[in-house]
Image 1 (cartoon, rainbow, N blue to C red):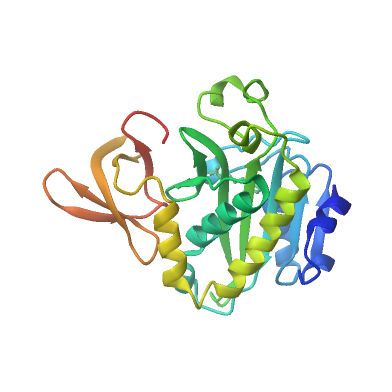
Image 2 (cartoon, rainbow, N blue to C red):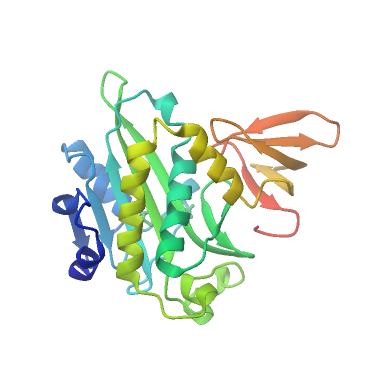
Length: 265
Ligand code: BTN
């Protein structure tokens, strides 16, 4: 699939020489972390046709069968402090909505923080991680994104069949994975160019795409569940929730997972 992806990229795309394609890999994020530690440059991209150990946050696996999705990781080396990147996952989510819109003809929603959704179905997810120098300075960011492109319901394992979906299921037509992959690469390049200078515009778009906002939500912290209403996203990408007693709290995606009142969305 490497050549079809290259054919879809614009002549101005600057990171073609740093693009690596693997028929099979354990996890594009894990492999890119090793390359990052060995000094790989800003803009290095890995795409795999299949992952044997694709994963999301909290050790959850990301089903990554051959020929069905795009599994991509990109390495950035932003010149800033880690706190200047609190909105990174939100910026990536907006970029992935842009990419789907450009390549599949519809704009998905974002379930806070990092899931691409349509209706009640999850179409993809994002996993970002930061790496640090021995002196504690930001060394790199790895951004991983997986998007289900070609699956029909029976392709998904039974345990996720109720909540998983693909671009093809939503668009009602065949999806060209190379076109989606190239659109993801282009959107991430554009995101990198505005990441530190257009933070408020990026967050405004995130709020417009986020389907969690203005809904009743369940916050899950370990065994504990709290019920509230999502009233805002703060400048750092935290979800601001109002509880029945009128108190509000900005919750961080590292601490809680959020569900709708009646299921995953
Ligand atoms: C999630 O659903 O919580 C995030 C899933 C992220 C999956 C992508 S696929 C490419 C990259 N490699 C991985 O192992 N994970 C990310």
